[in-house]
Image (cartoon, rainbow, N blue to C red; front, side, top):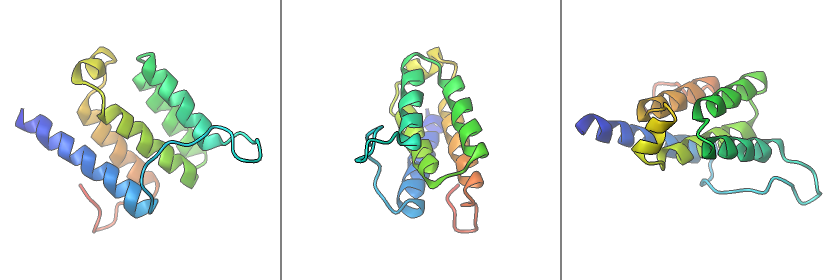
Length: 126
């Protein structure tokens, strides 16, 4: 019980840190198509990840996220990662367990994202 509360606080702290400090923005939803009618790759990735999560394929979605980020670590993909882990954090424990995913993996994923984007300095959280 206490370990779960600790993990939840860590996830929330990491999410806020990444969203507000690195992006200097609040989290929010975005359109897949921009004003000029072009496909936005970051928003399209988020759309795909959300669909995979909805189907219970959380591990596969996380793999896709990291494959994409490692191939091209765009700022837009950082926002996608934050939104992805926020989505997972909001899920019930039973839903995560059914998808063979844990809150600990959410925290680890956020730490990995933070490391990729170079936010592991001395003032970084967790």
